[in-house]
Length: 93
Image (cartoon, rainbow, N blue to C red; front, side, top):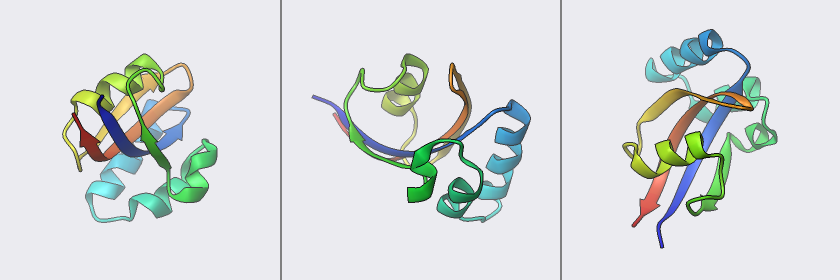
């Protein structure tokens, strides 16, 4: 069964999400940005969500994590929680 590890940053607006993505792509530290801005409790751990399988996250999040490019900052991804930046840190098929 497929498994993935990822970290994310959750914010309220698409605009904020896009601003943070630009900062990370310009060299700012993902974990530091997550700790400062993420509205998810995982922000305290740099946005780390640990390892999970398909169906354990909301569908929009799941689709990105199990089809997106590993190591790339993906998003904004809209879910009912808000807007996410996602970095897949590992995935096994």
